[in-house]
Image (tube, rainbow, N blue to C red; front, side, top):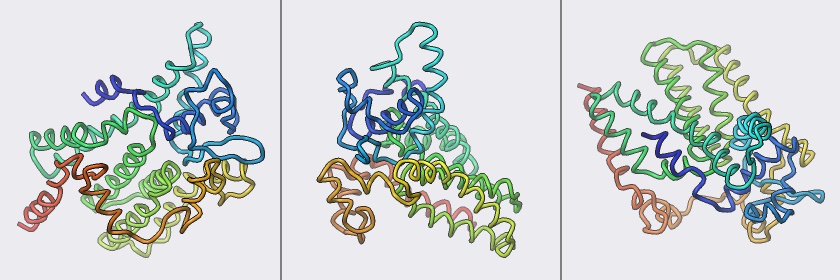
Length: 314
């Protein structure tokens, strides 16, 4: 059901965010470079023009975290070659829909069985199915799985990493491979969406809590494996930043081509400041963008968590 829905709507959402990421997908997969000049400076690609871009040393670049584009380019490169050899179109709508479906929608579809499997461990199959349907079709997960954003991809990486540690806690056993793989997923989550750095810190606290329960908080090999996985996941971003900007710590946000975006990101830490209660209200309950206004089913998370805690205590 999820795959059919994502396939039907794939590529229907178009905005500056998606065009920026898709521009980098094509640049890597087809032109084997990081500059997105073709989609930004040529008339035939005018539909992909975006303000979400950086400008450095005379070239245009995506200002987004590169993770989702790296995934898309890895998949689109062989598909583009096959389509070209068959004499089929590879640009315009074919690229937008095809790259979005293969690079985002198919990957995000795996959230459905993973959510079902997780819920089924604490509830019966019927409730697990209802929760899965509610999350997949009753939240923005549906929209963000059908457009070239990195949001659901990042959520998928974090959820799988969580499942690794959650399952290890239930089994009272954690391998070094699991520690390596989970940290690699969390690292690539950050490479896909920079703001998830806060979630990575929270996940690090969860890792420590599980290790203390397992009596392995001082096992340096677990931490070494985790560090290796995280560094491996960060390496594409570090290579990209060094190749484009000459500094592994410099990102596209520091070279915005749009004045208003540059001004916003010049404040705080790349635009991130102290928590604002007004912004929190806008993100949660405001009719314009509030997550609980858009998806009231998510309000059930609080009583559901309390019920699960009571059941576990019983």
